[in-house]
Amino acid sequence: MNEMQVIRWLGMVCIAAGITRIGMTPSAIIWGTDSPQELTFGLIACVLMSVGTIATYMVQSRETGVTGFITTLAIIVANILTTAMVWGQLTAEPGAALPEGTVVNISRLIMMIGLMGGSLLFAILTFRANVFPRWVPALLILMLLNTFLPVADNQFFAAFWGIAYVGMGYCIWTGKLRPSVERQSQSLGA
Image (tube, rainbow, N blue to C red; front, side, top):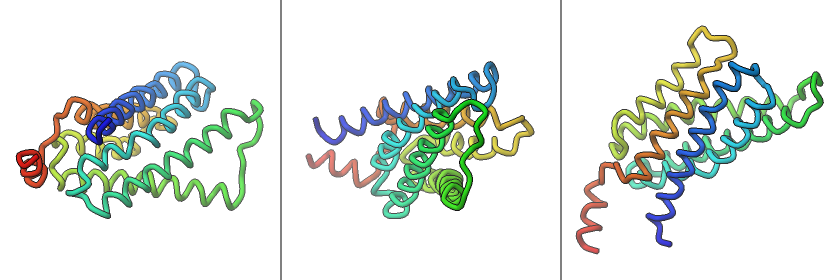
């Protein structure tokens, strides 16, 4: 299996992660926020996003450089921390108090900075890289703007987050990426 095939399959992981993340919204509406159904969708989505996010960097690594890598790493770390927090909630006794303390607060801070700051910077880098179609960074910005909607528990945030990943994964899987001048010259010479 060559590098492009691996990237393509990681794009499919992004699609699966996005669809799973979208599943959190109807679960939260039907069974309530932090219900076992919503948390299960969230746990699976976090694991898939932790794996698939690297493909979103790999297709534009030449254009985004080290900053793109650090941003992608921040998003992956945020997803890993979210996975741990969701697992903690999912396995806790019903009605039990959520964990508290300095480590939990620091983890939440890193998670929020990695997710929100990383996604914002990633959207800007993606726009400037011009590898993905312009609607992909627009979906990422729309996801972030959704946090300001006056909806209880931000139930629709997961749907917008999932749509952004489905869009990125779709572009990677189908090859609907704008090739850079450097990539075009390499493919002509190969």
